[in-house]
Amino acid sequence: MLFIITGPSGCGKSTLVHKVLENVKNVRFSVSHTTRNKRDSEEEGKDYYFVSKSEFEQMIKDERLIEWTVFHGNHYGTSKREVEKKGSTGDLLLDIDVHGAEQVKSKLKKAVFIFILPPSFDELKRRLEARGQESAESIKERLDVARKDIRAYPHFDYIIINDDLEKAVLCLESIIRSMRCSLESKKKEIVPILQSFTED
Ligand code: ADP
Ligand code: 5GP
Image 1 (spheres, protein in one colour):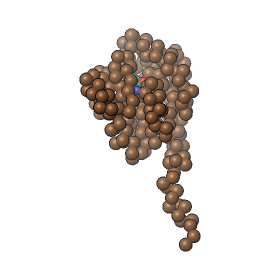
Image 2 (tube, rainbow, N blue to C red; image 1 turned 30 degrees about the vertical axis):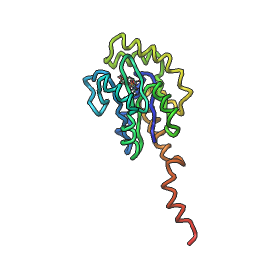
Image 3 (spheres, rainbow, N blue to C red; image 1 turned 60 degrees about the horizontal axis):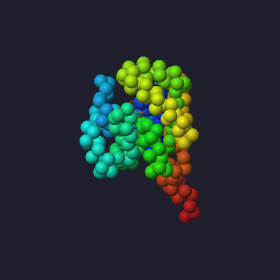
Image 4 (cartoon, protein in one colour; image 1 turned 30 degrees about the horizontal axis):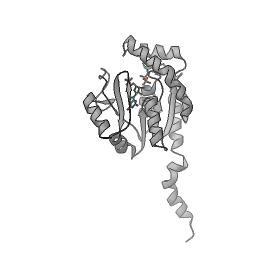
């Protein structure tokens, strides 16, 4: 199952995703392509595939992306290859922006759409500042985008308010675990059980 995790920049998406990857088996992370500069804490192929703008544009031309967006002047996108490679064997988490989530929604009906909300605007601002990765201008733009993007929440299946981190992690894990018990997910497992009930 694909889990599309979105919400304003700084709300805690990547923190939540990393915790869940540590805690839950058979969950993988969809590594996006980006033209943004690598942060010191990031690893090529683990956090992102860092590519040039021309490489990214070639991927768009070749229709190799399921969705893509431009955020603060940088391109970000999810490749079909990444989803096919990692999504066929278990659960896959996509950490993408609202615009990308809406593109996925128009293409894939089966994915689970999760919106992460910060407890307040002021706390979002505090988190972006405390992360210490962006310039004041980048933080301002992220906050401006957040004011608009937040209105998309009604289009999502689940809302997680990331106030207390432990509780928010538990919510995300619970959504993943409950989807594993859905009729759709259990269909294959049910076949031999049903067969064992048929008369000789
Ligand atoms: P995103 O991936 O949505 O841009 P991050 O996961 O990078 O956001 O989180 C932004 C900052 O907020 C990070 O410094 C992170 O450690 C912090 N953070 C995340 N969740 C919480 C929380 N529940 N309480 C306090 N700080 C948090
Ligand atoms: P950051 O620069 O903080 O890593 O990411 C900026 C924004 O881009 C975040 O909201 C993040 O969720 C989003 N993002 C990361 N990868 C993708 C992607 O592949 N597609 C889309 N649409 N957004 C992405």
